[in-house]
Image 1 (cartoon, one colour):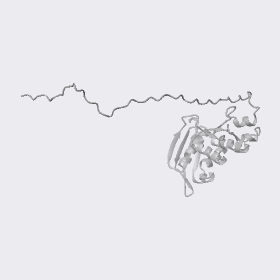
Image 2 (cartoon, helix red, strand yellow):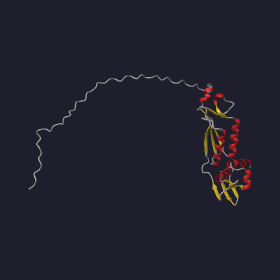
Image 3 (spheres, helix red, strand yellow):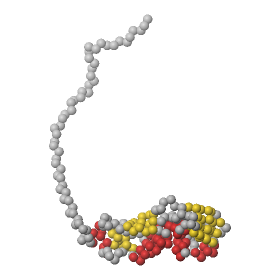
Image 4 (cartoon, one colour):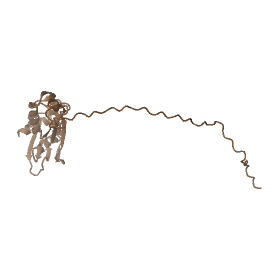
Length: 240
């Protein structure tokens, strides 16, 4: 379909759809016997057949082809192969943080493509934190938005790209926690005013009481002589 036609050049940037059609025949068939996100790839005699259970299965199959495909002398070449795979975990995702530093928009989109190539399916976007918001919202004061925050048009591009790549988006807004920048611009927002910071009194260090010095007993350096009343020991007499 239309989404698959947009997906193929994203996963195979070294070629175009026209090159694929000229050099190889790709046949995609939905297989009701395959589970969700499962796929089967059979490549031989210049024909590539992809069986899939749903759109994500088709995406995973194309990602597998992109992993093995090589563009040699203007032609796409694939090894003879037969693959069948299905994910073990339903949630396979990455969290991208645009609240503690807005990532370059083009790099953000490239990261999404890499996620699809790795057969991930969930993109968690951390939109705001104490520093501010990573997207431009008209309902927020200007001081809350971070420098180079994504415009609403760029957010729409991310949404459209996620649909093509088969990525579920989870936008995260940290409210009321991590809202330092927002509360600085809208001090009337909290239902309960912030409590004043506690005053901590500095304790003065008291001088330690002086203790009398105790002199150590003098130690004589002369060796102690043995008592005179101890008889001298003589070696035992030898037996006759």
